[in-house]
Length: 212
Image (cartoon, rainbow, N blue to C red; front, side, top):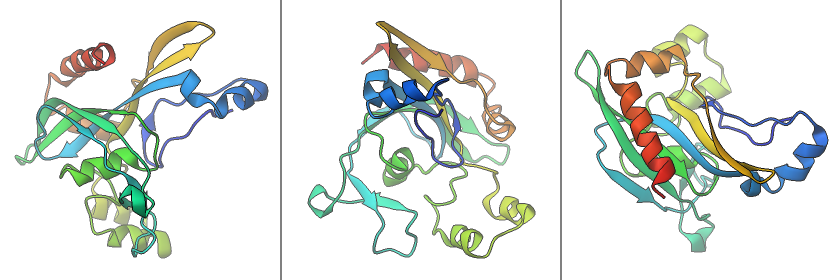
């Protein structure tokens, strides 16, 4: 029984219960069970340092692409949202394009939160079909359908480079971290442009876990 969800095309850690009763007991009180969530993300451009993004967001009701969430003031219906972004390392592709591997910790759980927040500061996620683009290819894919080959041609990647990496669990008086190492080949292929990314990721993850 799933205790929570991930955005479509987001990989990584999910919690499941082996019993329906446990799921019912904890699903409505997830914060008591799942206190902290950290994602690893590959973004366009060179991001350095760390930043807290607390831009409220809401559904794109008046826009053409309703799947998109947008920055919206609280008084206009926006919901409080907070994300911390920390740089891990620079990833330079063979063609010289610069990207950055970052860690994102979310303090609220809004729909598309990380994707909206990263786009809002100028660092959209690599492979995102909605954010960082005009959304026209995504609309066509949803309305008329595109072949697998055409999706690959237009979007370059099979999915967005967003991975649920680690979560802090509170259960029966114990507190512990769990981690997902299952990255897609597409994600690993991009990261392997920097041979030191695994060590740098481990170092920054520990800092983030212990540094609050």
